[in-house]
Amino acid sequence: MFRSARLLAAAAALALAPTPAELAARQGPDDSTAPAPATRCTGRDEALVEGRCVHRERLDCSDPTTADGCVAQPGDEAGATPSSPRPAPLTAPDGRRIQVVPVQSQPPRPRRPPNVAPSRGSVTARLNLLSQALDRWSTTGRRHAGRADPSARLTDPVVRIDWFSGYFDVENRTEDAVERHALRGLLQRRCDGRHSVCGFRMTQSNGVFDTFERTVRRRNGSTQRFVTRLFHSSQTDDNAANSTSREQRERSERIRQEFRDALAGNAHMVIYSGHSRLGGGPDFQPPRLHKNHVDYPWYVRNRPGFNLMTNALRERVTPLFFLGLFSCDSLQHFAGGIGRRNVQHALVSEIPIANEGYYHSLASIDSVIATGYVPRIRDGVMRVLNSTELSRFGRRDIMRAFGRLIRRRRTTEPGPHGP
Image (tube, rainbow, N blue to C red):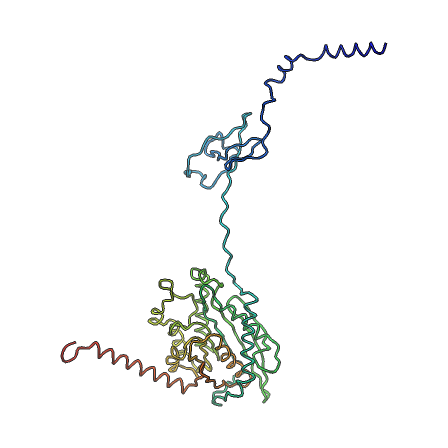
C-alpha cells in the first residue's frame, strides 16, 4: 500500500513540471553563451565598470543632459573653452549613465629641498678644526706672540665682537652656515683653562644671527662683558637655488646692513670670513656670473663690498679696535684702503688661505678675552698690522694710484711730435 502511494505522488509531480518550451519562454534567450563578468581590464585606457571594461572618457559637463553627476575638470568653468572636443557620454547596457573619472597624470617627484641647517657631520668636522686651531694657539702661539702697544689695550666694560660669515660658495653648495654652527658650539664649550673662547651663554638666536655673552673678571677686580654675535649669509646650502631666491636677496641685504652698522657703530671687533672677490668683497650674496663663471672684472671695477666697508669706517666716531679680514690675499686687496680709515689693528692674509686662517682669527679673539691685547702675529700666512703699519700701506696705495695716473697720462696725452 505504501509503495503505491509513493508512485502516485511521483506521477503528480511529473504532471505539474513545466515543459522545455515553457522554460525557454520564462528564461528568454539562452544565457549559457553569455560572457562571465570581467575582473580586470587589459587595455591601458580601459576601466572596469560593473563587470565590463569601458574606455576612459570624460563626460561633457557643458551638456545639460549629462551634467548631473559630472566631475568637472580644470578649464570647465563657465565661459571656458575646452582644450579638445569631448565625446558623447557612456551608458551601460541597461540605459544607466556611467560616470568615469579620468586618471590624472602623476606630477614629477619634487627635488629634495635645500637644507637650511647644515648636517651634524659637517658641523662636527668644522668644530674639530676650530678646536685644533685653539689648541695650537694655547700651546705654541702665546709664547711667540708679543703684546701690542699698551695704549691700545681694550678696557671698555662691554666689548662687542661681531663675526660675519660671508656668502661662501664652493661649486654648487655653500659652507658659511657650517661655520656659524661650529662657532656656536665652540663658544658654548666648558672652559678647561687652556683658552678663553669658551663659557659663553646664548641669549638670542634667530635665522640671521646668534648672540652670546660672557663676563670675565680681571686681576685688578674689574669685569668685562663680552657680547659676541655670529652671522651667516646663505639662505640654504644650494647655491643654484639661492641665486634665484627672493628670501636670499632679502637676507643678503640684511647682512650687508648689519655689517655696515657694525663697522660704523659701536662694535669693537669685526671679523669677516669669506671670499675677497679680487678686491670686490666683502661679499654677502651669491656671486655675479658671466658665462657660468664669477664675473671678476665686474668686481674689480665696481668693488661694492670694499666701498661699503671704507665708507662705514669713515663714519666712525672712535677708531675700530680690531678688523679681521679672513679672506684670500686680503693684505693685497684691502690693506691699502683701510689704512686711511679708523682702524687700530687689522688681521689680513698674505696668501690665498683656506682653513689656516681660523687659527689667526680665533687667536686674536682669545687673546683679547684673556688679556685685552691683540697678539702680534706674523708668520707668512696672516699678519696683524697696527695703525702705523696700516698708514704706511695707505700711503703706498696712494703712491701706486698716483703712479698709474701719471703713466696713463703719458701714454694718452699728445706729445710735441703728435700723439
